[in-house]
Length: 614
Image 1: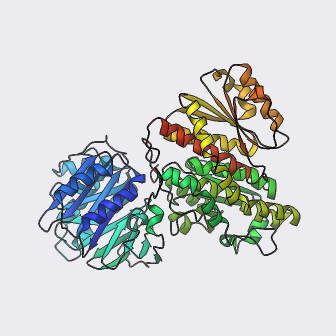
Image 2: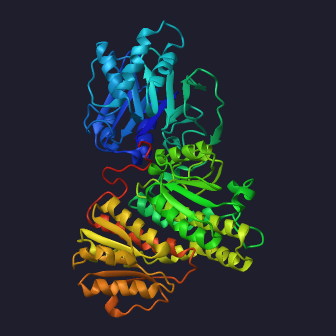
Image 3: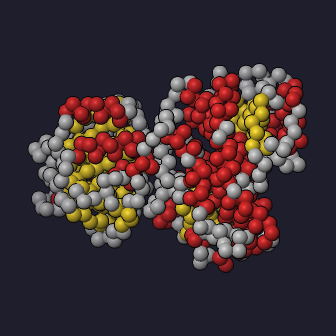
């Protein structure tokens, strides 16, 4: 969850580190800190709150060091205080360390170190690891590799997840990073090399990125680097071009990344769709499925594993894949899948979905599936991510960086790819060419329909103004629009802190109707199918109990005046794209709802973008 960046080069580290932290702040913004190697000492600055607080302090101190590490925190162990803020310094002043992850056995390790007379100044597990490295360094004979050896001795004693960057006072030209469970990438530039949680930290400064695997160490020494295992064996360093242009992670004319990413969706979806349809115009062509056609054609079931917004996209996929390919689909909370002993009889495919490709719960679900011999595919947005490397195949979303913590364009892309997967599987099995062609045409037309809906953003803003005083809201829909109701409620909770719940519309009578009153608005998604009349009947049940109703419905569906207080109209569209279109006004509604409350939509409280801890 936390953001790490380290710099070793010919220039001054300060600007690169602070800029890198700003780009990683979506990973955590409880506090931030930086440490510079000044030759005979470490200079440090640590501040609670946002990176801008740290930047103001660092600018006044102005270090000329060319070696440093920095961290932006999402608190796990210990409250949000300066003493718990990273970097952490060892008791003897020899080491500074930044850490992303959780050391599960930190308590016995801390007890052991205290028994050696080592004192602690924080409540964190990270300080324990820093002092453990210092302990092994002090116990090791002097040698050129003493620093590396101390790290190699300390890490196997730790149970849990970590991505670390660490400096040693005795080594003014060495920066070490290591990972297990938490992402870490090395950036290679002309004048400097980097270690970071995410390549976005060094966009515009590095040309190539090398993604570490679990159990690997990156040793940056001067202008050289090497990757080894914890056992000391050389590991292959596979580099990828850092091809994101810096403008992709800049706000431009928008007030927030969330707003920017909502309005990027027409372009993002064009990129997701580009080059992914067969020449006959009846099927999708997903490169990551090549070589697995026979297995996919003979599937007994599909299991999606994902968390949060990605899981809602998978639930949309459940409806679409069962409709198009007639394969049974289950959608699991990734965090629960690995701890269940679910039966795996038959030929099952596990599809893991994660925007970052580093969500720990999802990765562990994939590892559990592979242990059981199941075929695994991944849907992710980040090239070279752990999910991309660990699955048997998969598909990249191609939507560009998503910085806002509340996912928007990633959801649309994931739901789109689920529809494309359903199309491909359907055509492998028994979906007719004519039906396949209709789906292809609908997907190709999706970016323009999205742009059309977004042109009506002002109407949504006005609706958000009308309902912005509400503290409790219900979101309701049927079939593939039920997961959209869940996603709409999640977005509102994430960024506005209002209480919201999503339900299948028919479930209203089975409990939630007790909540209906004039102060609890209900937002209904109307399908545009034969079920529309049933949903409208549910709306009338709410109105009969003096509840407020906002309907989101296709233009062709007639809604009686007495059934809704407000109606937002969507274009008439094929069933495979309706969930994506219905979700757009909910994204805008949540955005404006939160902004009207004066809240920071990009950095909602207690949340971080990439959840790399359990």
